[in-house]
Amino acid sequence: MPSAGNYLDVALFSVLPYVALFTFLLVTIERYRGQAFTYSSLSSQFLENQQHFYGLVPFHYGILTVLTGHVVAFFLPAGLLWWNDHPARLYVLEAAGLIFGLLTLVGLLAIATRRLNVPRIREVTSVTDWIVLGLLLMQVASGVYVALVYPWGSSWFAAIVAPYLWSLLELAPNLGAIAPLPLAVKLHITNAYLLILFFPFTRLVHVLVVPNPYLWRRPQVVRWYRRAPSPARHG
Ligand code: HEM
Image 1 (cartoon, rainbow, N blue to C red):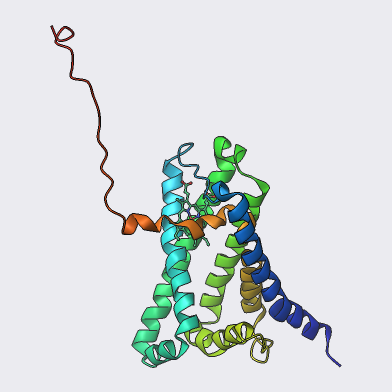
Image 2: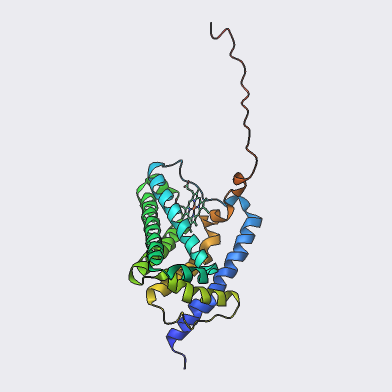
């Protein structure tokens, strides 16, 4: 007879991912159709600039690099395993992952501290903002913990987690290799699903509307129209 643990695994790793993905797609599209102007990071830079810089910049450099690593491991697991075949290359990759993970964590802590300590910023922080920051902190902290305690994640992600994620996409979840994973890894995966679930309700939607056209559109020419200074004013 299946144990309570088995049922929990099925709920978290076979059901939750679909609930999260379905909600993500549905709400993202509906929100864009109905309230396109709310697709924004809701910048607070004009309220406070200095702590903003020291939080937002490291956080974004860190998270974008770490996310790219996850995407590469998902799409090219065999390539990653080939790269890691050589210990020196494995160490470089693992060290880089940890450094960017720590950069993300430091940036995130700075962002949260700014929201707590600067009264003007606290004023404009909503409950959803706190949920986003809480989930991100849990995600990044559990990621760094896993990197420190269960090393060579780049290899076991490619060998265990990537096939599981592909099985989800093929609508045939295979929990065989996921069920025995340590609790911290399971927490990291579950929290990622929660982030995907809450994503479309929060300011995280800004990730989907990066102003890409700036990269290829023709430069914008701004012309100033000023009247010639009147000679009378200059004596
Ligand atoms: C795709 C590239 C991305 C761009 C261009 C971008 C850009 C921005 C900008 C312009 C802000 C507003 C900063 C301000 O207050 O002025 C912001 C805030 C934020 N971004 Fe991103 N972002 C990106 C990716 C991400 C990703 C991948 C995440 C997390 C998964 C993320 C999480 C956040 C959060 C949580 C905030 C709000 C921080 C706060 O509490 O003030 N961003 N982002």
